[in-house]
Image (cartoon, rainbow, N blue to C red; front, side, top):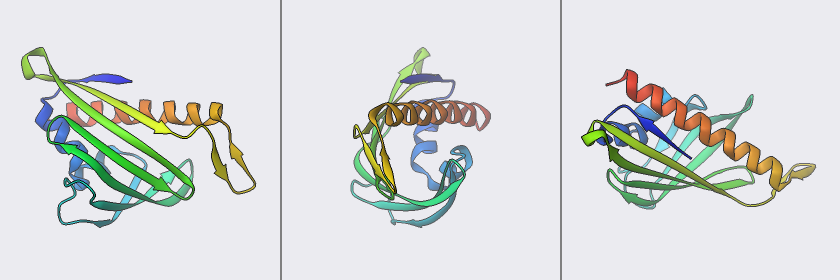
Length: 145
């Protein structure tokens, strides 16, 4: 999925990689728990207190690939749920706007206490997560210009 963000790519990139900004736009990120000295480097972990539904959990992000102003690929996990998010940024409108794409890769089934989520539940959860993240980033970058 992708969205057009009415802000330059440098502004959108900062919203993605600056933990102080992430807690401002990502409504699920409740609190930063621990961050590496250089979060933008590949392999550097960040821990968050994160809300999934109404349940606060600890989320760990690890940067797998960082191409400044172009791509950020993260490995994310909380509990038994593990997935990858890849943000890709491209210029539009002569550099005034940014095309932001978010790809989420999740296993077809996720083991849970007392059962599991099947691929349709996982797909629905992933689609909602991507849509919510893109809309939140659009709003934040538009308002924080």
